[in-house]
Structures are given as structure tokens and as C-alpha cells.
Amino acid sequence: MNKAKPSSAPWFYIAITMGLGMLLSSKFVPFIALLAFFLVLSITLRNIDLLILALFACIGFLRGIPQKKLQVTLKELDNKAISGNFRLFNESILKLSGTPIELKTSMPGFKQGTLLEVKGIYKSNINTLLPTYVEPIEDSKNFFDKIHNRLNFYLMQAFGLYEEGLLIKALLTGDRKGLSKETVENFRKAGVAHLLAISGLHLGFLFLLFNTLFMFIFRNDTISKIFASLFGGLYTFSLGPLAPCLRAFWFLLLLNLSSIIGRRARALNIWGIAFSLSIFFKPQWLKDPSFLMSYFAILGYLSLSEIFSVKIPKGKWTYNIENYFVSVLVPLLFTLPLQVMFFGKVSLACIFSNLFLIPVTFLIIFESFFTLFFLATGLPLSIPFRNCAFILSRFMLDSSHHLSNLPGNSLNAHNPTSLFVFSILYIILILYILVRIKGKGA
Image (tube, rainbow, N blue to C red; front, side, top):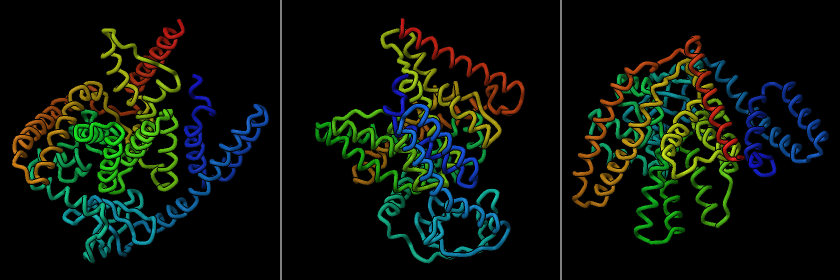
């Protein structure tokens, strides 16, 4: 477990302490106790690094104060009429011009980044503005917003408003408002709702496609990674303020940069840098379920390799089984406390459904990518790819419906039976880690 020492993975600990400081920004006494803890530990262990961590806890504390004040102000506006000029993103997020205020809403039909005059009733418990009056002022002139609107145009042109087409749009842009409630519920019960939110899975697929495409063109790994990162960045920022997508982009960008400059970086450090940057610039994300679940899912993978030094031996017949076990069960158990905290329900069907639907998601993204590519370039090759994407999308819709009927698809997290099942899963994971560590030392 040497890899997890502060000296070898400093940014991991910086991210944790900055997050703690931010969470305690409205609790002065516990924050002082945290600083005292770092001071005593630093003196006891004679390690000045712990004082540096205390400094980052202070940065998090100070950065979180304006956000806490903003939350208090918004609570005072509960059930009151408010108005102002807002920029609209993803047809669901309103950003008040000149402020860090972001409110949820539902305004289909407007382009990305459109400046709107909005009047409505604010609901603080769900941070949502229910509009009573909306008047467009001007279209966005932002470069990334124009890319987003162009992408939406090609998606509409290629796939229309059929349920299959709306699913493809959700998988490529994270915009699932057009999907039926039945489809969204089926994905939730099947334990694959994360596929409808742009995350590391989707961006990783696109990075792979971009990198393969540019490798074919340039036959140079460094140039391919630079262009793949560039196009990945254009895609990420064109989607708007989507926390999981930005997390994935920062992570992949830093990983690629470390590879390009020839200096191998620890994945745990990259996780810490991405997390720290995200909460520093967007403190409100620290309480966003999708943001936290995205980060803690990837932390599950990193914990096995970077903290416990678990390596799955290749060449053995158990390799694929273990790899699947780690890729599904570990993220589930690392995000389980967050699912309980925010939703109160979890689905164990994901243990089976991810096996089928993650590869299908990759194929849909692949077929859709080339459909849009040939449409944009005017080459008459888009129809076969579009048809394949439609067939796969229909398969995914039908599969999610059947998988949503499996036992354990919507467990109440506070039910004694659920707690027993979760405990067994955690015990299995702990035993697996102990066996692998013991096998490595033997």
C-alpha cells in the first residue's frame, strides 16, 4: 500500500482535505478541530506535509463560504417570484447572467446558450425555476454553443424524434428530456441509468474513436493523442456544464499529457487534480449526485490498483470473470452510500445488465459517430451506419425493459433484506482484496 502514501499521491489527499474544508465552510468549530488535528498529527509524525494539507483545507473552507451564502439566499426565495436574464444550457440549466447562480428548469425548443428573459416561481428544495414567462433575447455567439447546436441539428436530421433516435441523442449528449418516462424508469430499474448521463464511459469511447482515427491518418501516437484530446475537449465543452463529462475530460487529458511528455503519472494523483479543479471552480458540484457518483466510481477502480495494489493476473481462465467482477461490483459498492443518501433506492440488476448494455452503448456511439461524420462531410455513406444505430438502439430499449423486471431492480436501501445483501457484497469485496494481496506476497 506504499502507493497511497501522501508523498507518492499528494493530490489525492489534497482533494480529500479541500473537499472536507469546503463541506465544513458553514461549521466553524468542526473546521478548527480539523486544523488542530492536522497540527497535532504533523508534530507527532514530524511531517510538514500535513500542514500543507491543512492549507488546502483552508482554501476549500474559504472557497465554500460564498456558495453557502448563496444557498442561504436561495432558500429565502423559496416559493417566490423571481425574474432575470438567464443563459440556457442543455434545455435544463439556467445560469443567471453575471453570477454563479445555476437553476434547474425545463425549456425544450431553445438553442444552447440562448439569452432569455425569464419570470417564474423558485422551488428551493429542488433548486428549480418554474417559468411563467419566457422571452428570447439573443442567440449565443459562443463557439462551443454553436458546436452544440450544430450537433443537435445533425442528430435531428439523422435520427428524428423516434424513441430510438431520442435514446441515441441521450447517449451522445446526455440530453434525455425527450425520452419517455417508461424508458428512463426501465434504465433506472435495470441499473444502467448512468448510461444516459455523459461520463467517463462515453468520453472514453469517443477518445478511443478519435485516437484510432487520427492514428490512421498521422501514424504517430503523440499527434494522435493531441488531436484526440483537442476534439474530446470541443465535445466536452460544447455539452455545457455537465459535471461527470468534465470529470472524465480532465482525467483523460491529464492522463494523455503524462503519456505525451513521457512522465508516467499515478492515476490517483490525476484523480485528485481533476477533483480539486472541479470543486474549486464549481463548489456547488460537491453536493451534486452525478458528480460525486462519477468520481467515486472511478475511485473504486483506482483503490484496487493504486492503494491495495491488486493486479488481475492475465493468461488465466479467471481473468475475464475477475475483470468483470471488478468493473461492475467495485463501482457499485463505492457509489452505494451516495445512492442511499440521495435516492434511497438502489438496483442490483446492474450486475447483469451492464454485461450486455455497455458493449451495446459502445457500438451505438461508434455507429452514430460515423453517421454524423458522413452527414457533416456530405459523403453518401451515412445510411448504413444510421440503420445499424437504429437497430442497436431498439435492442437496447427492449433489453432494458426486460432487465428492469429482474429481481432486485429497485431495492429500498433501508430495508433489512437490502442491508443484508449489501453487507454480503462488501464482505465479498474485502475477501477478494485480501486474497489478492496474500497471493501477491506469497
